[in-house]
Image 1 (cartoon, rainbow, N blue to C red):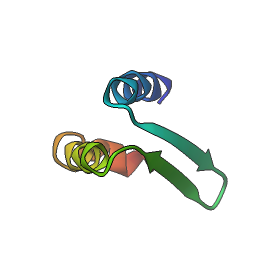
Image 2: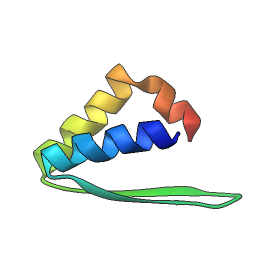
Image 3: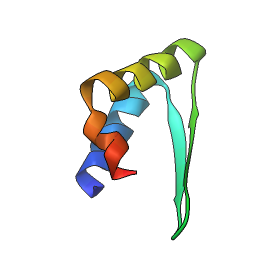
Length: 57
């Protein structure tokens, strides 16, 4: 997961997106910030190109 997070961090930085991720035994919460267009493109990319990332959560 560390490699995935590092790649995501670099890609998000290029797109002007910031995020925070909190994980405990019961919940995973992620906050994504950026322009509406950039965030929507990111979410679309995650769903269509990297569905395995959703299963990690």
